[in-house]
Image 1 (cartoon, rainbow, N blue to C red):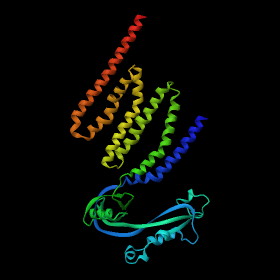
Image 2 (cartoon, rainbow, N blue to C red):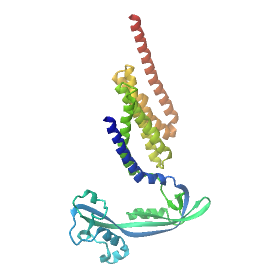
Image 3 (tube, helix red, strand yellow):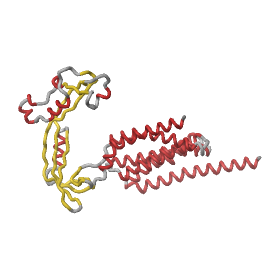
Length: 354
């Protein structure tokens, strides 16, 4: 029964995992394969326009209201210049901006959560957006390639800053699609919130595999605490940091500051995953609780989480940091070895006494 429940849990977790991965994260992974090159801006155009959002509720819309899809399309096609000159040519607002979504024929975002509602009530809110269109030139296999890049902004200040940084004759990094060389982007870094969603979606699958590993090891390790210490070490101390996160750190297009934070997380998980095994070992050596806490911090947590990141990212500290780390680890090892020797000596004395 337990195995069948675990199998169902793994199947459902894998469906969630692959659904989120291919729907949200895979396009970013493909984008990370775009080839870097140098772009030169030939011209840049600044185009304001209206962009509209809908706020919907699970109430039936009043009769006589326009359909939201047509209202939004009509509003977004209006000219911002004409609106400034004549207010009647602006998008509707307030009580005039109510509309409906026909849930019986359309797959709208909120309709799924609204039971027994056929005409969902919505209110349209429009504001100005700004499109920057760049005509750029770049090299593809030593041949010049022209392309157009467009980026949308909701803030006029952000749009103006972008326009200043990419005005004609400016040179900057860009990335082109090797499968379609006319497709160009200016940023191929991962989007943080998308990978946070991926992490949460993979958590059920991760936990299911941990439980499965524990079930498999039941045939080889009888002691409950030793078995879970090994399971924790395998998944939290090895697979998560050294197989998953280290691959992202090495190959993923992450900002430099993000790489430093990611390395700290990798070392933290190595320390966290190793901690139960270290504690179990120190308990077997008959150290006191206070001694176990001190040795765990001095020999595992502080070196991995503090010293190694400092040595990696603060070049001036490499020499002194390395010396302190080595001395600290040697002292911890000597403490453990001396305790083991004294423990063996006391055992031998007891045997001889018998």
